[in-house]
Amino acid sequence: MRKMKPLVIAVAIHALAGCSDQGGPVDPGNMNGDGNPGPAVSYRDDVQPIWNANCAGCHGAEGGLTLAGGNSRAALVGVVSVGYAPEVRVVAGDPERSVLYQKLLGNPDFDQRMPAGGALGDGDLETIRAWIAEGAAEN
Image (cartoon, rainbow, N blue to C red; front, side):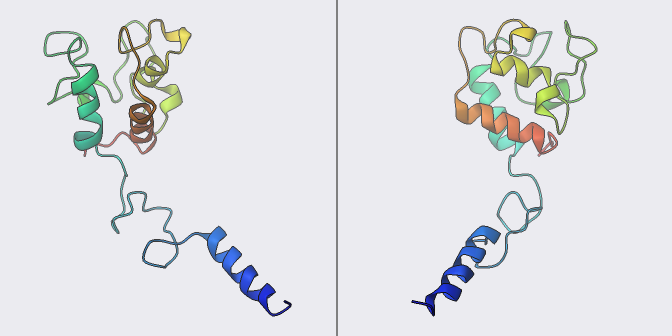
């Protein structure tokens, strides 16, 4: 039994240290797991479809906040939120300071929860939170 302790300790250390699916150490700077550094969430492929399915019906192409495809990211990131000035709609890297994320969570300090009459699922909320936290990239 004494001979197994080093093996158990080695396995535990390896498990705690983390490893990639290729057997090497995890690179914490590579959040997307594809071998290339960069964000794990794509605005075009992951976030815009959430806007299309849940938000663009009200926040479409006509006036105000437009979340329809095209320039939706430009309408969000670093833009002062109408009605909540000087707060910003999306603060790149900080979901907690982003009006958009707070409204999606239903924070009562930001009036009505969005989308109106419902709520995004946990997966969609996490995608948006991760996108903001990763720097709200245009990718």
